[in-house]
Image (cartoon, rainbow, N blue to C red; front, side, top):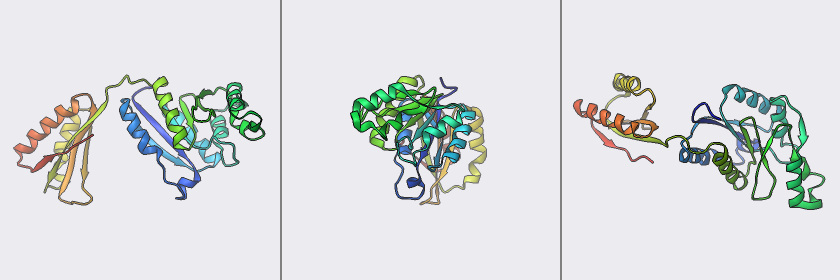
Amino acid sequence: MMNDNHVGVIIIGDEILNGKRKDKHLTHVIKKLKQHGLSLAWCRYVSDNEKFLTQQLQQSQEEQLPVFCFGGIGATPDDTTRLAAANAFNIKLVRHPEALALIKEEFGTRAYPNRVLMADLPDEAIIIPNAFNNIPGFTLFEHHFFPGFPQLAWPMLDWVIENYYPSNHERENEESVRVFNIPESELFNMLEYFAEKYPKLKVFSLPSMTNTNSIELGFRGEGLAPSRALNELVSNLKSRNITFISEQTA
């Protein structure tokens, strides 16, 4: 279903943007993606504003990547994600019969008058099961919509990855060293050489914010390629008498 192994993330909620809550999704998603050979292309934080969210979802369609969206699918007035998704894809918001049945099964008569609103989904949506309280998320053209609460959203994220994006990529690996007492500018030509020789790898240079005399140099990519590139980098550093130590990477 994907053009490559990248995905996008949209995290929705005024409480995150105004500082009342700290986002926990991004760190978790990055870790989960790595476990399945996937990578994060971008992450956007959006307020509970139907117009802004509609615009973001329209833009993300053009990028043709799977997108994981967290938040705003509840039944309160500030939960605008379901309507924004319908508007972004230019389809109607309808009461989804399977979602309605799940909500009624879970809450009985207490499903009315408000909880049933969470069964109003974009017309072509496919539900995402929610083992925690039976209120489903939904998938719409490779956009996957989850609740904002991690204890609900993360098991649903696992379900989506396992069912839609099984691990068909090699796990991304990272290898690096830390060099000392050399300006980053003097490493430019060497890094350019490695970028050209290993076009499938991400070559990175990260100066330390706490130690101005050190820079982490490394490679990120699939399989054994980062290790091969690092071996060549080490040989290059030794030949230039540049001081370095190996970095421990996860």
